[in-house]
Image (tube, rainbow, N blue to C red; front, top):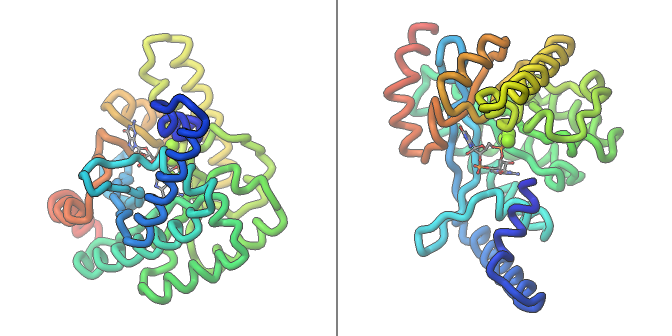
Length: 292
Ligand code: C2E
Ligand code: MG
Ligand code: MG
Ligand code: MG
């Protein structure tokens, strides 16, 4: 799992426990500084309609670039930020940036109803003032609530289900969209799907990649899992996005199974803000303008 890979990656060259603690401490300090100096930026990956290829939304993804120019992947620093509590200032900064930049894009491309998906980690969601934080960011940035979609993982919804349901209802009241990220990899307690007003779920990339496995048995298993997820989504009227679509074969298969939206390298890599502007000029404008 990402959490373990993250830790393992930091520790992989270390031999002694002392060194490991030291290294972790250094990385933690570096992350703290990076947050203070706003060295963590966002990239934006398009989520598209599988039928038409039209842009639906962007997912904001955190990027940490070191002064040397190299990038530390979120699978390494997000788990560290969660363990150290740094996710709280970091998450606030990411939400603020996503809405600010989303607002700027909306101003630059008024014909395109730009939506923004933001990943929210468990600790951030559990803050007692989380709903107030979201409310304030929307007010300060002027980004419209219905264009914001928060991506939550299943684990977020397992904790204090009472308080969690309350928060979700408050967010729903603000008009914000909620989606379950990495669906199928967590505990998949089905009861919450009927109780919680989420609007969508994202099928984890693992199941999409399995569709083009060389093992027939594995392909059949993944088809069955995706069918089951789609059945649930149909029952609870949730929109479905397939993550990690890398080739045309995967796209064709998820579309024919009945998935509505897709995200993956086949359509676009996560893009810098400047590349998003270019993307919107090239791809999205004509089709959206036609539809409008
Ligand atoms: P996620 O939310 O499931 O995001 C999707 C990940 O899949 C992203 O990895 C994206 O770059 C990657 N991806 C997209 N298309 C493809 C594809 O076709 N093939 C493959 N192999 N991968 C693809 P990324 O940016 O490295 O982020 C990894 C995870 O880190 C995210 O998974 C999310 O859980 C977490 N993360 C990233 N940014 C944030 C953030 O701002 N806040 C929080 N709390 N977590 C974040
Ligand atoms: Mg996500
Ligand atoms: Mg995901
Ligand atoms: Mg995923």
